[in-house]
Length: 62
Image 1 (cartoon, rainbow, N blue to C red):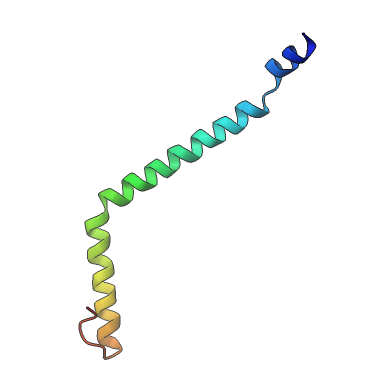
Image 2: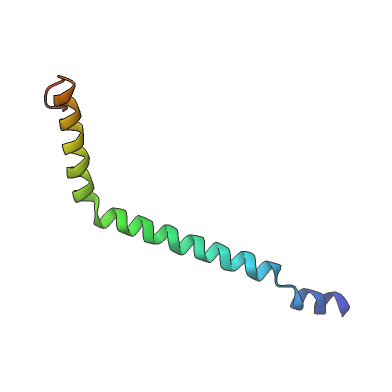
């Protein structure tokens, strides 16, 4: 009975679970943001690649 009471009062597992849920929520938010900004990010990186390619004399970069 004593070990059951110790288990019920132990908060380490709950804390680890909370951190795990928080990490999963943050990861889901990052994935969602990247998916929403995918077109804009693609355009921005393409423009940067073209600018670097032109400055280096490499043409259009594609």
